[in-house]
Image 1 (tube, rainbow, N blue to C red):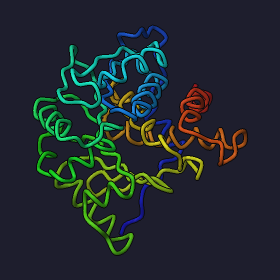
Image 2 (image 1 turned 120 degrees about the vertical axis):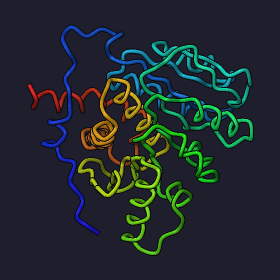
Image 3 (image 1 turned 90 degrees about the vertical axis):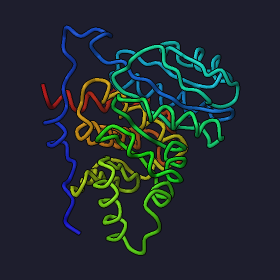
Image 4 (image 1 turned 30 degrees about the vertical axis):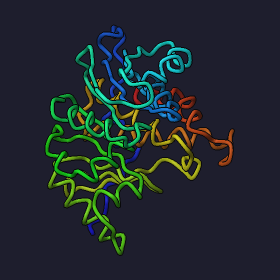
Length: 285
């Protein structure tokens, strides 16, 4: 296996675009988050809030009806569209054309949700992030990946990756299988872990931020929100994936002295996103 390229601050500063002084919400991108089911609306909240807090001008969240009040009360800045079904998603209908879509956190694997995901993938042309249950459904229907836009970003944790590419016997085999998978389906794979790697065809990138505090429930949901936000703001997927994982990890590095490992939560990631961006802005100005 060839040595990975390191995602360093120096590399990120070449990618990062500070917000234009004349920007308004209409120029900062409109993202859609499709997430949640009964008992997992928190995943939709975390992904939506992190999407907003990563610079996106407008965020619309598509959820089952049971999440409506939760979303409206917990994030007043997010617009909410609901499925006709109460407890899980069955028919994804968007009253807008966004710049990017993130789908998967907490959606479950109900048969109706599986059908809805297939119909969505069949018609969607927007830049896309696939996470969590969207990946679990796709792992049983790999041919669906032929429907996704080129350079769609997949964000599997180790178990989700195994479902997608099959078991591996060594680290080198894991990477080789992921490279083959990335090349076959023309997708970018964010291999979440310690450290996180990005596989883009036969190129491997290793993130240099983050620590064990990120090993907490909802951490991946916030990453989905960050990546979707960056895509909606016009970052190319190859750059959005690098900047997203770098910022996500940086929040944990900045927060750790204050929170320790144990009390760091996914909400802490969102809380420290502003400080992470300021770290970049202080150097790039």
